Amino acid sequence: MEFTQVIEGRYSCKNFSARQLAPAQLDAILAAGRVAPTAKNLQEQRIYVIQSARGLAKIDAATPCRYGAPTCLVVAFDRSNVFTYPGGKRDSGVEDASIVATHLMLAAANAGVDSCWLNFFDPDKLAQALGLPENEEILMILDLGFAAEGVTPLPNHSARKPLTETVRYL
Image (cartoon, rainbow, N blue to C red):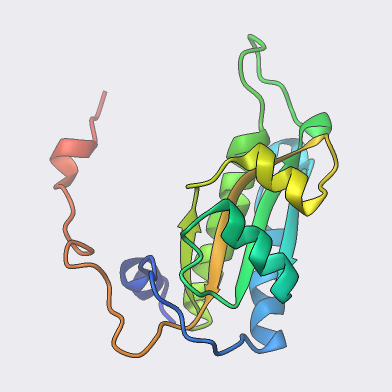
């Protein structure tokens, strides 16, 4: 698919069918996350694939926003392996995991897989429920699957502010 079609057509799916991803589709999506750039190439991302009934129940206990997705990717990062920027106020963890998650989301759209980026949950409680190491911090959950019949983007999906409202040349 042409890249502009991927980024313009992708939307947050709010109702998934039970149809599972093909292993090759999931592999392609995960591979896209693997090649995402990270500060100093530290590759501190950790991606947890949740497909079991037990795992999905833990996601459901953490958020009402799984929307029936048969696969969820929990994107986290290793806090002990991040680059600290000059001034010491910020590090690369959140931004690197965000870049990885964006690669995953766009690769899903390119593979014909619907997705939804989720942040409506307590990351510490979910990390504990999933048994993640203490040095890892969850950034987000990515629902993956195929839209249920009749599901379309929200009516405001294509509404965008003009560049003059969001971009400034200095």
